[in-house]
Length: 261
Image (cartoon, rainbow, N blue to C red; front, side):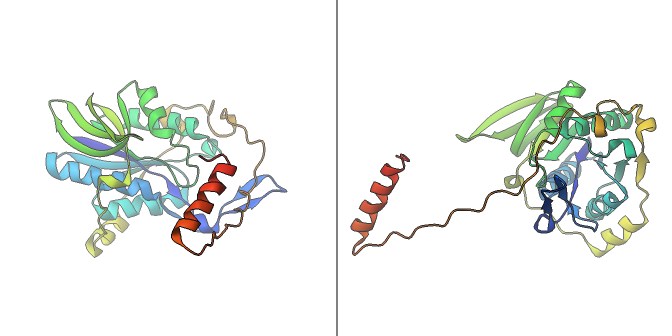
């Protein structure tokens, strides 16, 4: 079984700043880190490989800095890493990233399951896994909390919903985005870190992928109109009373006044 994990290198969110004058988000310098939700996808990919055999690889769209995130995955036991990097890709929106990743997956060729974290913590769009599945024309199940069975070119997964979960059977190949309830990611070993340093990361540019730059990078369909930090949270209110019943009654009246209930 061949598993491909889509990962993203994200900045340290606490250090991200908003420049309203320049109408842009200012990202911190430094290598960043693997998107936390993608770590669960990597762990699940490794578990599937350990159970069913085959190969487990990671692929990402990024720049030279993204290599550190890819090597972090290699240190965990991933077999190979692929970096899709080109100046033409800079500024791509989620749909464009989906197009670039799809081109990379087609060039990669042989895969049975494509995994990804449910969303990236910087953009929070949760669009890329679905976009990849749509472009490849293969089944998808988003927000998966358990992969129960994989056999006979089919997978049975538990897909999280607001009411609980759905049990979904999908023909392979398929794309699954996963939530953090699916597993507990492992830590890299010293040997794994040393091995990762020596690994060669395969790099493909736009030409390698057969992309001419249309609909990616600055040509993406999404246009940023305004960038601003979220408004400050309003101050809370402490409801006081002589007895729990009095406090509960005041809370009830407050909720009624604000049409919450």
